[in-house]
Every structure is written in structure tokens, then in C-alpha cells.
Length: 164
Image (tube, rainbow, N blue to C red; front, side):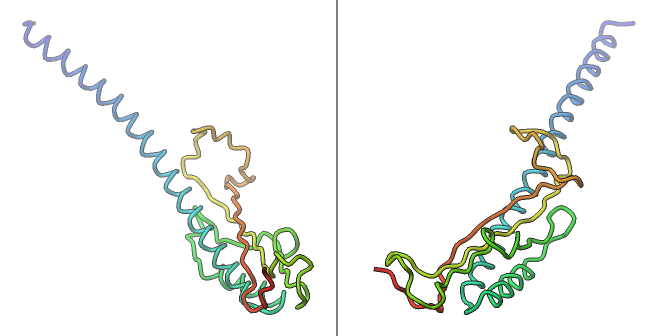
């Protein structure tokens, strides 16, 4: 075998190894990018939905109407249901849903104002679900979803402002 043919085979073998190593790292980077994209989308959808739910609840005059308004605002924010589940109210009781209008009376503290606090959550499923960036997978539910929550507080806009 001539030295030229032997050198060409060696070069082809080195190229194959370099391509395999580069492909492995490229696949890892793409997988992490997909997970981070879905995680970011989930946080963004939950943040927007929670803010809209709190704003809708703050425009109501009773607790029951506030809960109904918050739930209807959450229904507007549709998700795919596979990777990001529909945002929901964490609960309709304290401390996750607070409708404090002081019974229509002036607040006991002059620096307070009527307010509503809404807490929502959603589940996010990461397709690769690799433990990276310190993610130890402790907050996974039994079905492989991350549960995340967001809370907003808004002033009740139909109530009189008693601030100083």
C-alpha cells in the first residue's frame, strides 16, 4: 500500500471521529435549547395569564365575581396542553386568592388600599428533561411535569382609594 493511500485513510478516520464528536455536542446544545425555550414560554404564558387574571379580578365588586373574572381571563390564554398545560388558579382561598375590600369601609391603616391577590400555576413538560444548570428534578410531579406558580397583587379599581 502506498503511503499516499495510507495517509488518505487516516485522514478520513480522523474526520469521521471529529464529525461524531461535533455531532454529539451539537445534539446536546439543541436539546438544552429546546428545553430552555419551552421553559421560557411556560413562564411567559403563566406570567401574562396571572397578571390578566389579577387585573380582571380587581375590576369586580364581589369575591365571587372576582373569582369568575380571574378564571375567565385564564381561559383566554390557551396552551398546547402537551408541553405547557393551561394556567389555573392555585386555589380560591387565602393565601392564594385574596379579595380584600375591607367590606366597603375605610381600611384600618390609612396607607392601605383595597386589593386582590391572585396566584396561578401551570405544569411544564420538558422533552429532554436532563439535569442541567443545577436542576435536580425535585419539583417534578409524578407524570414528569414541572409545576410553577406566579402571584400578582392589584388594587381593586372600583373601590374608593383611601391612601394618604
